Length: 307
Picture 1 (cartoon, rainbow, N blue to C red):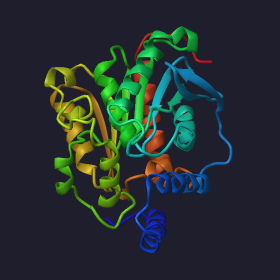
Picture 2 (cartoon, helix red, strand yellow):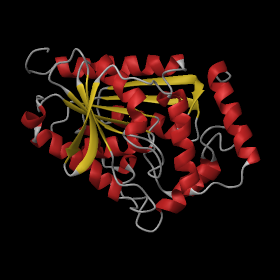
Picture 3 (cartoon, one colour):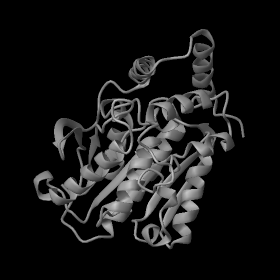
């Protein structure tokens, strides 16, 4: 199936800009991504949004008009190099509403200033802090989920393996194998929003401190016993995505370990679509489905009432 027409129009703009511009620097990518998200993002949020600190990390707390005592801890995408909690507000705002729970979007340390596994340690620390400080946040410690897209999906998967007591995980086209050895075998390396040149730039920013064979950064390489202990997962993948097969393989690995998995493949979408709910129907659909999944996991656990 070809790309969704709206997604294709976005991809065409990206390809035109790439053809006209020199190889971007990290700062160019950061600034360009910020401009793009600001242009296509919502001007207002349905949730009340407050600046908070989560385990010493800056974060945004989203409180929807109707919510129970659950909490989603969210990690934004961006190859561990770009993005922020503020720039993920479009999807997190909608996720909080769809899940009927609060959500905290975490600003973890980025490369190349802080190379992985700094981000992974931040994700573990943030999720651990939220569980330990549930009462301070006004949430039920039995109703805490983690989630993220792309690099953030990696962080959520890592946290789900290393923080006990989590109720659910939401992984949106997660990169779960960070070894540079896998890059040559990726599909769709050219012609789409996420391409090989961008992946190579992200890898260069992250190299030096990272061991791609370590489950701390490549959660798909965790042992079966570790995988068997993680919470139920919602995993979304996109067809026109170089890291498509990583998400599909992780869903299969979790299932093989006995974990309940809801996997959804969007065969007319590309990497990044989830962050564009204002203009892409499938993004809104994926957010609704992920939110419904979180709500089901929370409501299956003992806790308090809806606010």
